[in-house]
Image 1 (cartoon, rainbow, N blue to C red):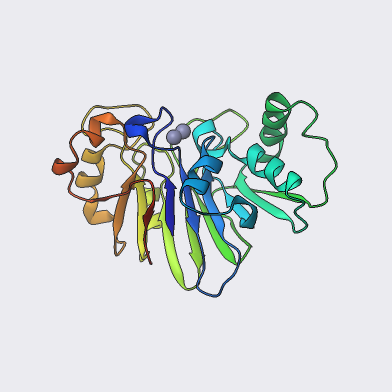
Image 2 (image 1 turned 180 degrees about the horizontal axis):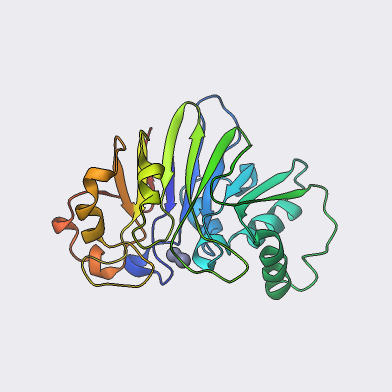
Length: 245
Ligand SMILES: [Zn+2]
Ligand SMILES: [Zn+2]
């Protein structure tokens, strides 16, 4: 897996927005875990081809987590892609993606393409498999529109289990996201300051005993954390970080 983007919404630390590129061991096409607005640049910076991506798993419908998808679709259109692109996200993903595309590139939502964009919407508790990856959804505590429910995700690919908090305040659902996982990717937006609907480094320290994953890597950090990485008691992501799980 490659952290193409490990940043927050505002470019803290010069980092790209959330975009984690996952490639299974069997040569299957890769998938993305979140696709923030900056993701095509982030992928290319890492030498990764956006046109290869078979599926995108979306935690929630904020621009720093899903606004790269219109670029992904249009890039594929101009690259004459033939195979389908699967988008798996929370309730409301299909309608919000169409609105986003129309706002960014008028006419693009209804343009005819050689490939299908197949959207599947998950509710907490549901599991769906696509592009060789099974995803189970958990309820996150992070408002992203009345038509939607932000998710934490637990992905299984190639025998590895990867948990991802997305953006969320601490919720006991995160125990299930982490339980027995090979890796938990957790947001750590601030160190101690209470920011509504986000995880802090302090929350992860407090609940560390409840997060039974083999490994924890922090992402989505603001300057408040990035300026004090020496005080952080966990592994931290950076753009371009490659991990083998
Ligand atoms: Zn968010
Ligand atoms: Zn975010």
